[in-house]
Image (cartoon, rainbow, N blue to C red; front, side, top):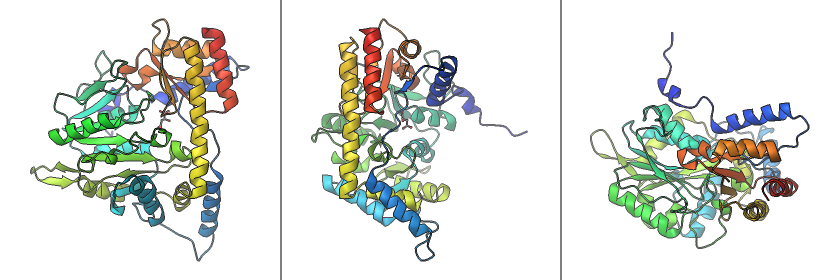
Length: 410
Ligand code: MLT
C-alpha cells in the first residue's frame, strides 16, 4: 500500500473557498427562492476587455494555420509578453529587470504555492496573520510544520499578526527568519504597505540575510502614485526580494490564467556547503522541469492588456470595481461597521458586530441578507472576529447587497 504524505493530515479537510462554496450551495438548496449575492471569493465579474479578446481571437486563428501554428513555447514566456512586462511594469517606474529574470506562469496561486519548493525544509518561514492561505498550506504540505496547535497556528511558522493597532501591516520580526511572505495591496485586509514600510522590510531582509516573497497580485488597484507598486522601487530590493504578479485581478484573467514571477539573479540563498546560490538558477531549473509555458493564446491576451486600448479598458474595469469597493465601504460604515481597506484594493475588511466570530457572522449575513462574504478566520487566527467582502460584482448586485445590509444592520 502506498504511504501518503502525512503532512496533508495537518490541514483542514477543505481549502477555504471550496468550503464556503459548499455552505452556500447547502443554503441555496434549502432556500431555492433566495437571491444569493456572492462577495466571497475575489473573482472578477466583468468580461474580458475587447483588446484582449481581439488579440486572443487572432492568436487562435494563428494556431489554426500551418504557417503560424506554434507548439511548445519558451518555458519562461514569449518575448512579446516578457518585453511588455519589462517595459510597462518596471522600466516605466525606473526599475531594470532582465528578460531572464521573468517567469511567465499560469497563475500566482500556483507560483505562491510552488516557490517554497526551492527552500530547505529547515528554512524558517514567516507569514503575516491574517494571510492568503496558500502560503501557509503549501508549507504545511511540504512538512515544515507540526500539527496546528489549539490556537490554530502551526508550530514551525513565525506569525506576524496584523492588528488594527498596526494597520494590518505588521513590522519585521525580531526572531531569526529566512523567508517572509508579504502581500501588498493585502489580501485579505485590503490595506497597502507604504514606501517607508517596504523600506523597513528591505532593510530588515538585508540585515538578516532573509528573502522577501512579495505578492503584488493587486498592484493594479493602487491609485496613489506615491505608493510603490513593485518592491523593486525600493533601493536594494533586487538583492532580497522575489515578486509575484498576476493578470487575474488586473486584467480579468481569473478564468484565463496568466501571471509571472520576477526572480532577480542577485537574490541568493546558501547551499549545503554554505556557498551562495542564485534563486534565479534554482527557479529556472524548477520551472523548466515542471512547466511547459503558459499557452500562446493566453500570453497574446496578456500582452494585449499592455496595449494602449488594453490599458485604457482594464484601467476602466479596475475603476469600476473600486467604485464598488467605495460604495461597500461607505454603506458598511453607515451601518455602524468598522471597516479597513477598499481604497487601494478591491477588498473591504470589517470588524464583526457584537463580538460574533467570523463564521457566526458569515451565517448571520447569509441567513438575513443572502450576502456571501469570507470569514476572516479562514485567513488565519489573526482574522478571527473580522470578515472580508469583495468589490467584484455588478453595480446592481453591490447596491442590492448594501441595501440588504443596511436594512438588517441599520
Ligand atoms: C481570494 O478571494 O482570496 C482570491 O480570489 C483567491 C485567489 O486569488 O486565489
